[in-house]
Length: 617
Image (tube, rainbow, N blue to C red; front, side, top):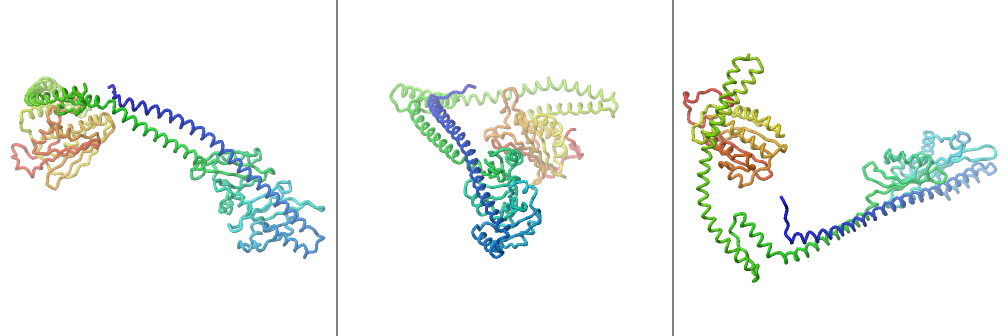
């Protein structure tokens, strides 16, 4: 089907398309350039922040080493009286303020330790706590004596975060090792300097020395929030094979970050700075949002201007065009209200006169057509019945006869015998369906017996289950137990259910779906059978006509419109009712209500008998 658009729509669409392309291209280029520049800027900024932290931590570390050497010289000076030595050490603790304890080792043996008792007491710690920690974490003297600058996190609680550094002290007699427990106040201030970046400091082994979160320092954590693939790249820096690196990775909670790492000049410390990408590109998103709002405002403004402009040009012609389409659909109750006194106004007057005359003629034709349609339906129905009887019943009789003859020559235990029995059974059912159709036309009474509703449902589902399965339709049963019998022709009720099931499958048009068949006993004593699907549903107009003969919503050649009309006649013949519950897009449900035997008058034995009848009989 070819789509057509009025001139007004074409004008508006052209205007909007041009504006959309121009604004979209500008927005895309600006957003792309800004994002590229922003990415480069964030990478450079993280590297610079990490580099500054590394340089400043290097300066602090050098200062700590020099002060530690000063402590060591005083402690090793044997020419100073003990009182003067103690006084000098006390003065150093007060002046420096960051040293908590200093220990001298000769070989691996501790020679002398001095403490800042005030700092320990304020943090709730004792000398014994420091000694116990050092016993559990001995210094690597071989590495220190080899010239390595040693630094490790030695925090015992959050109240006193500390760092232990150790250096070799050379004197005239031998080399000694001096170790100092230093407060992390200055390094923590360094890591907390930025409110945007999360900065931290590690040693060459990747153990955290300082972090803007003291809890991480107190827990002696490593770089556990960095994923393994990023850690592999970071190891190149930790192993002193690179001076700086910038990475992107997702931290533990899944948030992506950009991180920069830089090694200090002496190689003993590594500084890191990371920032969430959401925060880094916040301004980029704000710019993009602003551009989008500007673009939308331009589109809305252009649409409003285009609508007024186009309507002024095309409104009279469009009104006439719509009116002509309505008349072409058979609706003659339309009049144009064109006030112009030009050629279009004269054309509108002629159009109004034409529709008035057509309306009068259509009323007369409707009356005649109704009578003609009714007579044609009855004639067509009679011809259809005769054709079915002649063209179908004779071949079925031949099939049935050959099946019965073949059964007599086959052993009853043979699979062939069972197949022939199925052929005989289904051929009889086809013949009965044809007879039921003719009975419906002739208003003949069906042959009714006391029948189990659930058996009818089971047999109906068995017959159509394969066809439904091939078309991806699943059938679910919700059958109540111990239902009373109904007085019914089992084949006819089975035909009703098959019609409903096939119609449900055809309504889904090859799409997967479900059909639910249910039975239950109502409080009124009647039996209710429900067939519900999740197909496209029906409109109110279709529901009103669905049981009319020859009415169908299927394409030409795919339906006669007789199935549901025959179904309605069967249910009515059984003194039952059928209701439809359906809305477009919500599926359809056919609800059948049939009386039980107890609700009917007593059935004479010679006419109906009392045996239980299977639907396949």
